[in-house]
Image (cartoon, rainbow, N blue to C red; front, side, top):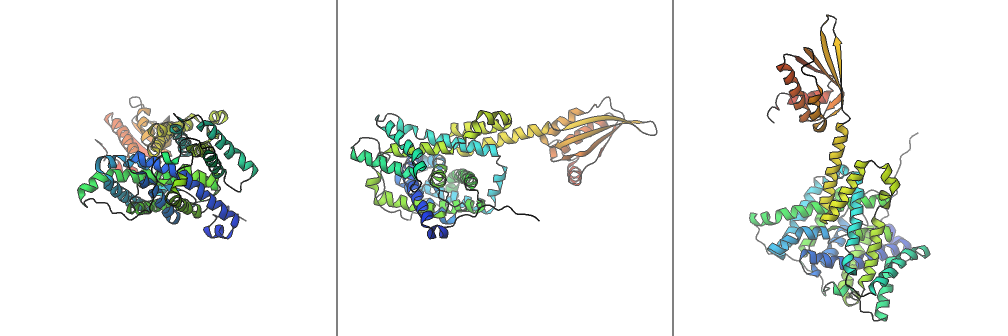
Length: 500
């Protein structure tokens, strides 16, 4: 009798609407995320070189759209620093209309890549790259708070400490209300009652006083325009998809549930297209706000994502004057605790580092260092994957062995048999050529590949080179033991690789 392991069922919006407790969790989570989105969206707008309202409206349209279109419930998408860094040159060199055109084209590219199944490539991202990705994000979230604690009144520091204390201590007493929300409300009330002069949200940028409206970019629909925005749109699409899919995988692990990565990929593209038509700066998944929503607040459905966008719009448009009074110290405290909670502390414990192979640790450290140095998650993850591939190829290459054995036939003639064990590909086959004793071997040479596999053209080229060198010395070479796929590859490529 066999048993099938099943993952826990994903809570649904319908279930949340029927459960007062779950509904309260989703609503309050959405409110906390909305409050945390405001300063982030404003700062990312500044990075991109656009009006803060552009980032705020983009966060609203991205969150609401992805709540319906995305494949990972409870994940938050909004304007992000990664996208802001990619599109900033477009605004600087060509203006706002070209930025919107870039967002629209980037969204279309994401839809196409999603439908082509690009999400399946996530299986090639090693676990240590994911660990490095998470740790780097935690560090970046923390570093993003540093400007808010430099050259500020001394009262900011005890306020941050009190905020952190509330977030740490309150869940031990009650989890009815999210601790970050209590910290924000308490510190805001204290600031207003004591009439403290400390930095607040209003100091970050002007909040909008009207709803977003449809917008069509005023750019010529020509090949020249595509040549201008194409590279930026492609970079935006790739960075956005990578960050979103990695964040979706992280939420999968936290919630012990699966998500539809293909739907998430094209859903991100569709959300960016919608955002572009409302004049937004585009975006992707936000790991910081997603951690607030999923890990800190306990949200699990699309409702929290949808409400985060709705609350964001209501707060900045309807209650902008009040929101502007929230002290930045409260939001800094929230984000510091998000950074602490996001970091994988187990991965840097001495006991873990002692047990972990050095190559695995190298992959994690490379991902972290490059991501933090460039502030670009795509570059960091890309480098991490390349380092992992290189170290894996190097490790596998050393697993290949060649054993030489002299054999005397019945007629008294001597031949030599080389038995090759291991996987033969570009990293291992390059050394294969040096494993033979060309001058000392007898006239007949047998290369037995029954314990190996030919994976690529580099191996076939190496075998051709070995055969050629023996023939120049008047000796014959016989290759035996090829499995069907290796034999087919060898037959198809042998003799046709000279000069390549």
